[in-house]
Image (cartoon, rainbow, N blue to C red; front, side):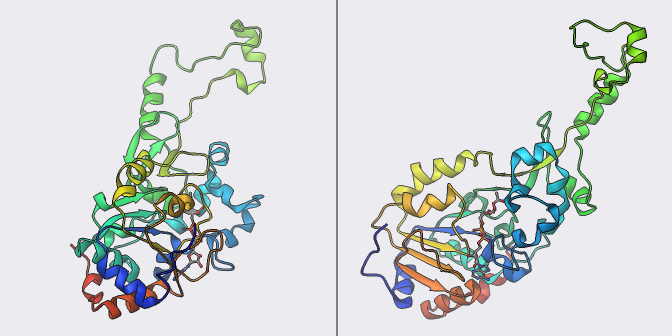
Length: 312
Ligand code: OAD
C-alpha cells in the first residue's frame, strides 16, 4: 500500500482523530499487556516464548484445531494463563470507548479473546471478535453450547472440561437394555460371545466418552466468524475514514490483510512497540500504546481519564 504523503506527524494524527467520523480500530494483544496479560510474539515475555516445555515443533500449535482434536490437554495446560479476568481495562481500551462516546467508532476489530473491550464499555455492536472469545464454549462432539464461565472452574483447575449433554446421553444409554454397544468385528459380523470374552482387543468395545468443551476461540485451521468478512467488506469498507491499528504484529491472516483491503485513500495510523515492515502505514507512532493514546488525547483536548471509569 503506497503511503499517503500528506500524513506524517503526530499533529497530523491528532487532526485526523478530530476530523474523522467513522474510525476502524484494529487491535491485538499489545493493548492488554499493561494489565499483565502476555502477548504472543514479544521476545521473552510473549506466550509463545514460554511454551518450550510443551515440546511442540511450533508454539502456535497450542491453538491448532488438529492438535486440539488429537490432544486437548495441551491447550488446557495453558488456558488458565489466558483466561479473562475481572473488570479491568487499560487506557487503550478506554481510548476506544472514548471514540465510541464521541460517535467516531465505526468498528473495533479485535483479535483478542479476553473480552476486555466490554469491561471498558465498548458496545457489543461496535466489536467484531475476529478470533472469537471465551464468552461461550461448544462441545466438539455434539455441538452443545454453554456460557464460557460454566467451564472456567475446570480451566482454572487445569482440568479438561467435558460436555454435560454428552454425559447425560451416555447415562441414559447405559440404562437401555442392551447397555454398552459392541462394535462389529473386522469380518463385519458380530463376534460370538466366546470370541468376545477371549478377545484382548479393547477396540471391540465402543466405550462412550463425553465430548470436550472447546472455548469458542478461533483456532488455526478454523474459519473466522462470518461477521468479520461481512461487516468489513459489505459495510465498513464504504464508510471508513480513518484506520488505527494498535498493539498487533499483524502476523496472522486474514486479519493481517485488513489494512490492505480497506480503500487506499483512507489514512492509516499504526501504534505499537514494534514497527511492521510488511504493510505501509501513513503514520507510525511507536511506543507503549497507553502512553501514545494518552498523548493523542492530551493534544486533541480530550479527557481520557473520564473514560477510564467503567460504564456499569
Ligand atoms: P502479537 O504478540 O503477535 O503482537 C503484539 C504486538 O503488540 C507486538 O508488536 C508488540 O510489540 C506489541 N506490544 C506489546 N505490548 C505493547 C504495549 N504495551 N504497547 C504497545 N505495543 C505493545 O499479538 P497479536 O498480533 O495480537 O491468535 O497476535 C495475533 C494472533 O496471533 C492472536 O490473536 C492469536 C495469536 O496466535 C490465536 O490464538 C488464534
